Amino acid sequence: MSKLQLRYFPDEVLKQQAKKISSFDASTRKLAQDMLDTMYENDGVGLAAPQVGISKRLMVIDVAGEDEKRKPIVFINPVIVHKEGELVGLEGCLSFPGVYFEVKRANKIVVRYQNVQGRDQKLEAEGNLLCRAIQHEIDHLEGELFIDKAVNNLVRDLEMTKHGFAEGDVEQLQDKIAATTVHTITTKQSQQQPVVG
Ligand code: NI
Picture: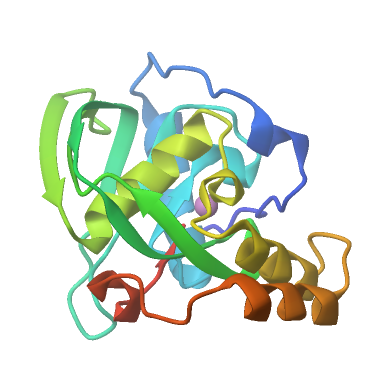
């Protein structure tokens, strides 16, 4: 088992578009396994290669619950070929420890990708943790981050400031949020387990 070093915001590698993988050799398999080990070690649901400093189109996801058997999926060169609907849910990111806020995603997706053997795969996900995790991780491969998809930018700024990822005045942000936010649970998804990927 080998653990890789996580990269944290604002590391430059997180903003780069990752390169397509064309060789499905032992080094690709080792990277996938090391990424899974690193994800499990950090209690993540997903991890993309740029988050360990490797700008390649590889990501791993496992949405199995704590007392379930592990169900790792390795996605190489993933592409979303269909998306529909809207899904709002709480997300975190291993590159922003401690930061959580609501993010809007598609409710249903179809993704095509290759597995570690290089075989073409297709997967559908709808309205669940897997659906959101795939979208979160594919964004990482594009150099896009969840901070640009917050449902409420003030809540995001408060979370970023509280955890040392942004400059700001926590009390001032809290006052602004209190003045502008209607305090309702926005969707039924809000009570579910957040994605951390
Ligand atoms: Ni992430």
